[in-house]
Length: 69
Image (cartoon, rainbow, N blue to C red; front, side):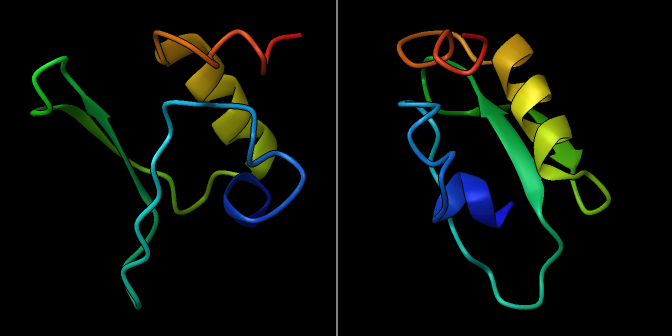
């Protein structure tokens, strides 16, 4: 996850937000337009490429197309 947060892939998704919760496994929350959680995924075993692919397929809006290019 670090490349998506601090590394070379951090600018791939304009609509991606990150919150560090020490000791908690990485989770991905997909939100509705009104900001409520629509889906939640445990990403503890996902590598960076899997996260980028998942987000490229699931995120809507500005920035989602950058990851595919």
